[in-house]
Each structure stands twice: as C-alpha cells, then as structure tokens.
Length: 360
Image 1 (cartoon, one colour):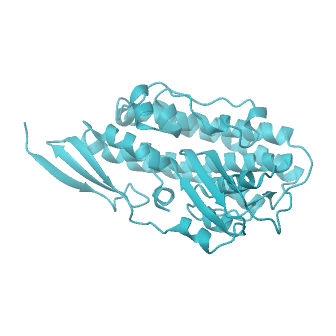
Image 2 (spheres, rainbow, N blue to C red):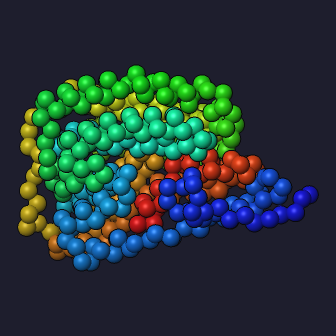
Image 3 (cartoon, rainbow, N blue to C red):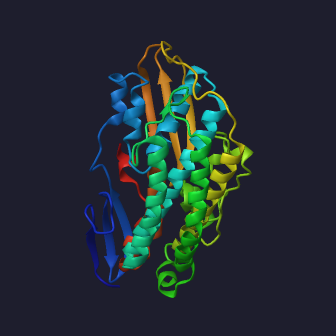
C-alpha cells in the first residue's frame, strides 16, 4: 500500500468555469476519496424576497446563473403562478417551451466545447462554440438578450415571436444540424475521445437512484427521469420521450447530451408547427400572493425545484431554489472514488457543474 496524500483540486483550475474545491485523497495515482467544499460565491439571493416585490424578484432569479437564466425565470414564475392560482395563456406556454429548448441547446453546445477543451481538442472546442453562437443570435433576436432574457413574468411572457421569426428559428436550426452532426460524430467515434470517456466514472443505476442523481447524470445510468414529463410547458403535446443511456460512464453522459441537442431541435420544430394564436399574459397587477406552491423544471443539468410561499402581500414570505448540481455532487464524489487522478477534470465536467446555481 502506497502512502496517502491529500491533493487540493480547485477552486481555481483551467477546466473549471466556476470555483469548486475538492480535497483528493490519493494513493499513488488513484483517488481514494474526494471531499468537496463549496460556498465560494454565495450571494444570498433568496433573502432578497424580503426587499423585492414578487414581480421584481424575477430579475433577481434570472441572475442566479447566466446559462440557466431562462429556466430560472420560468421556474420562479410557475411557482408564483401556482401559489396565486393563475393559469397562463396557451401561446405563452408554447413560447416558454421554445425558449427553454433553445437555452438547452446553447447550454449543451457550451458543455461539449468545454469537454473538448478539457482533453485539449481545441479545434473541436472552437467549432462547438461557433455553432452555439447561432443559437445565441436567435435568442437575442427574439428576447433582446444573449445571456439574461427577461421575457418571463408572473402571468405569462412579455414578448411575442412573429410567424416570420418562428420560421427563421426553424430554418437556422436545420441549417446547422448537419454541422452539429459532424462535430458530435467526433465525440461518439473518435478513438482518442472514447479512450478518455469510455468506462470512466461509472455510476450504476442503483447507485444513481441511491445518490439522488438528476438530469443527464441519472439518464446516463438508465434512469427514465425527466421533469419535462411532469407538466410544465407543452411537452405532452410534442411527443416528448426522455433520452436514456445504460452505460453509466462519462461516455454515456456525453451521448445523452448529444442526443438531447437533436431532440431539442425537433421539439422546437414541433412547437413552432403547433403554436396557437392568443394572448401572451394574464394581468396580475394589484394581486398579492397568498398561498404556496412547488414548481419543478428540467434544466439542462437536471431537475430544478422552485418553492414560493406568499404572505398575502406584494412580498413573498419565502422562496427556495434547489438546483441540479446540488443533487449531483454526491454522485460526483462516488465517481471519483477509484479513478486515476488524470481523469478528475473530465469527471467533474461530466456532471456539468453550475456553481452559481448551487450557491446562489
């Protein structure tokens, strides 16, 4: 038995877009145990419900994270709408679904680029982010923003997308689909990529269930779990079925995200085809929140949980967000046990950690 050493990983590391710290207990080149430390960028956003009216809190919630911004706005609004007993117009539900899938597209393309960068495949990294720019351009054209969109409000949405722009969205996504296929084929078939991903960081289905894994981490281990089946949005009308892989390793989690890229394009096409005419929002001005509600949404990284409790005033008594990274950290700790120290950056990336979301 070799001597055990503790090696600090993070909070600053080239592969980490945000700060997370792991104390790695290693023996020779093998990780025996990983002890996570988080909290470096806690901002106390949930406490602001005491100072911000529930209509103003949308802007705070959207700034929890720049990648998951739209989903956070939608989840918060859904929780407030549930507490107020409000049903939003059908067109607003379709628009929220379209924007959410576009957000999933840009998030997964961003992640694929980061994964390529982690094993020094720089040309693949740049091509992934080049295609992501096309999606961000569509988001900017339809919402006015590339990072923070500010289109969700309690009661519906603030902006519409006209028929011409809806057609442009579909045409643009179809035009880049072939390029995305070429790039994702590299992830799926290239020997050097598969050598870094296949058989690494295996989490069995039973372990994923026990550890409470969510999102692509859970679905990569064979768990049929996706909050898009739970009712928010119009996914029941789009023929949605979760993408599931059985391998449980880094490669399976990568394949889940790749397949979800193409699935998101198909869902957007179907939503554009079926979107009805109608109002964008129902009025909530002058109404107070008197009740409590939980909304669950499938963010790109997995299930996000939004709780809102009213106090019969224009301020919420309590608001709580639980993000997917928070749920996937126990699975990450399990993945790291027994891995080679050289695989640690890849393993951390395969849960697609969003620390801003986790710490708020």
